[in-house]
Amino acid sequence: MRTIDIHAHVLTEETIALIGKEIPALKPRLTAIDGDNYVLEVADVPYKPFPLGGFDLERRFADMKAAEVDMQVLSATPQTYFYEQDAGRGAACAAIQNEQIAKLVKAHPEKFLGIATLPMQAPARAAEELIRAMRKLGLRGAMIGSNANGVNLDHPSYETLWKVAADSGAFMLIHPANVAGADRLRAYYLNNLIGNPLDTTIAAACLVFGGVMERHPKLKVCLLHGGGFVPYQAGRWVHGWQVRPEPKLNIKGSPQPYLDRFTFDTILHGRPQLEFLVGSAGAGRVLLGSDYPYDMGTGECVRQVKALSIGEADKAKLLCNNARALLGLS
Image (cartoon, rainbow, N blue to C red; front, side, top):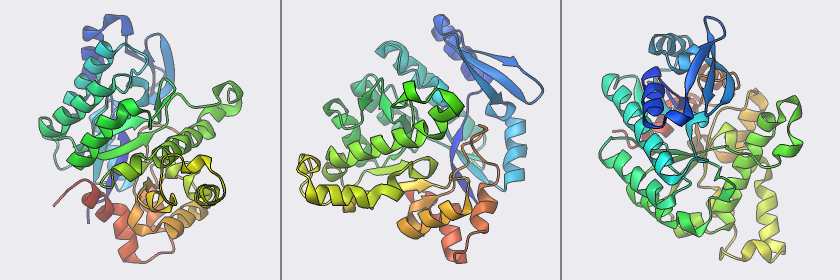
């Protein structure tokens, strides 16, 4: 059994250089803090710390070995989604990153699989890029933000994208971006601690109550960071549909069948919480994730799964088998 981490970000120095050459105004650059951490600056917006493993393959491979991770599914960094750029710039940056991810997969097929980033501010181009990324570059799906500049994922403009994703068997990961309530989440790093799971929850609700999951029964959606608040509040959504008219606007029946199709990664940072997720969703719907290389991720994801009070067959599902099935691996 080879462990597969489905939530791992990458931004190589070559990719940074290519983005800077394509759009000089973005001025992407890395500045060392110490030997292990850097400041990543894009369009004059700094993010820190950006760990060495985010761009250095030697460190990444060492970290994977230490974490007992055999394979990573590479995705772009949230700092380089570029949804705030115009459609042309967004599409160009997505294409560069997808080609670079595909290059890494080709060079290290035993270590990496890849998924695309998409220019979500331009839905038609996002659909086109998903097709290109899967058919030409060999990527397995896409990681997209929980919204694009405040536009929720059930907006009619995304309908073609969802159809393409469903028809192509794309593995679609929802990652928080531009989180709601940011004006009240400035202190204590709440924009991440609360904002990230909150915005994932909003995205999931829009996919359910907006009818996206109903219209596309083959759509494969994974909610990162343990699914936000969705697993804990799913019963409230079902009850709300039963007693209120508003949730019935776009779906004909209970939201439960659509909730039951979501998958989740393991990043919950607590054994009781992860055991609750596995117990409520079932071992067949939870996948190994580390959120590498960020400090809000974990290098303990494999050992956390191995420590769970579940059977060995279920552990194998989390560590490997679920990812193989959803990524279309033989």
